[in-house]
Length: 196
Image 1 (cartoon, rainbow, N blue to C red):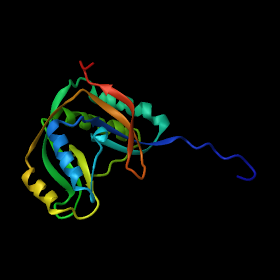
Image 2 (tube, helix red, strand yellow):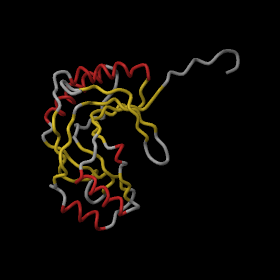
Image 3 (cartoon, rainbow, N blue to C red):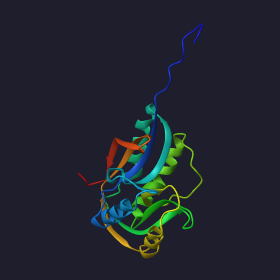
Image 4 (cartoon, rainbow, N blue to C red):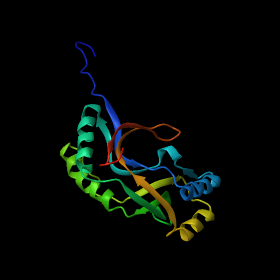
């Protein structure tokens, strides 16, 4: 910049709050079947599986400690719990599937964390997207109309059980977008009460 120095740019990152999920055997089988379909279905890498509790988007790095504190407050007094993975569905609709997900049940503790987290995050200046939160695990993205076998799975597995996972922590995650898909890294974990 001519005639002066540029103001330093504040460090930004893409962030979200999530529960990371290790695939159960039944979920791994489903994802292997989906992977075999190939294009236009792209499965989520096993290491990236998570349930988003709050997407933050572009976030000042200097605000991340406050985000972690908000997560701590939201998790206060919540003990580790088992989360059932069940039901297969898509967004936005069965006629135009773009995101394939597995739903959850026995998720009252997770809902309690989200309900407590939202006002804390809004107090930090993050706006909401106006949609109610829905507990789901994104297992694949669909780039075009998939083959009939995908629609058959949606019908046959709409109420299927895919096992249960133990939830013992909530993570503040960072996301870096790339041509191969997002790369996630852990910023900090908040451990639930009594979980070591």
